Length: 84
Picture 1 (tube, rainbow, N blue to C red):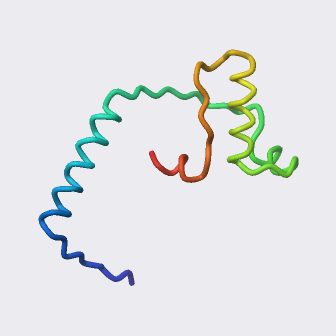
Picture 2: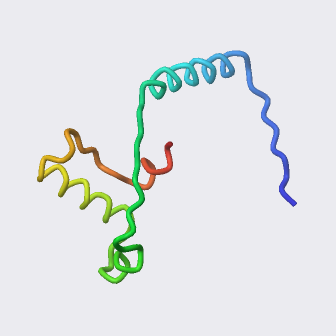
């Protein structure tokens, strides 16, 4: 059974968390995201070529950038994929 962990935060820390939350909401409220389902191949092909999901996405973004498909390409890492 999981154990609940309680935190005693000072008013200063609570204010800092609230400020960070406001900045995050202001930055992400302008984001627009779209996606499509790709079913031409799956993870088995990626694994067959000894690639990880992060390296595969990095390669895909670099190819798109080279072909002029995307305007700005940033690096993809595990931390970036978990941040949303």
